[in-house]
Image 1 (cartoon, rainbow, N blue to C red):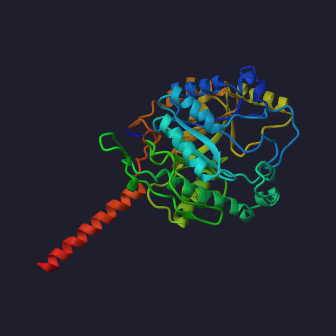
Image 2: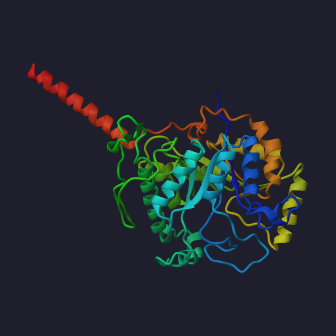
Length: 412
């Protein structure tokens, strides 16, 4: 049976249009309440969305890249994404929960234990959207170091080397986090009251990582979680981020604006995998699309124009802005799937309105997700990974057995 495309929904405040909070369907008075996020997650789960991502950053939202603005007519402020995911985990049962957690300034140990805890309380439905920060203003919140301003014009012109250090650091953060996730083997906890042994200390290992930005030694405080390795996702727009995804992630979200870019960007991602020597399963590639959905194309265009007018300028996005009908969106998803994409991450322009449109019209047409198990890895067709230390012990045991067999043959 052919798997349906992976459907991810990106949750961010009142929606991805800056004026969404002024839409009649919005609930701006509830944006900072637990009930609002519970309702969105539960609704997405009932609609059979595979996973929701939750946006976050180390600074308040801004209409300018990497610098604060002075606007007072757009939503500012947000709740912590990892804490939102931890709250909605016990009130959902099937949907994947993928909060954004920033790699810059945030200690890998805290990232690892927070996401392990989420994986435990969700019974294996956690993921991580790893995101770095290049903002000098965000660095000032921590006071540990300064970051030079990013030359946005040069970056847009193709000079990406200025961002390489941040992505190199992010790669190390993900590596340390993955080592910490493996630091307890699956059977490290014994709980044998008669002998007084709660753990097997030989099955708890240190991360033992030394790099340019930090040295991390010792094990996680959280035992191995249901997935072992929660899925890691990266949003990528150009070569260096594609390389981070290739070396460190399981899923990559990319932003093609038309069919030609859909082909070329996918080829760039696969090239990054080959160039970095990625082993094992290829990246799962999802296209990003920001949607305004109505029953007719004219109504969708009118809704977008109304939001743009309230915002004072047309919507600007790194992703394709799609204003149309659910049927037209299905055609777009089918086109991406035919090109080799594994699915889409949909950014609803208005919450909850566009999420409701997805639930009522788009997802039923795609069919139910054929999940093989209960974890997010299983839902998306990923195998549960073997613990690296268990695998090393098994390999060492096989090598020792082979050496012993050869010695016996020589003795005979």
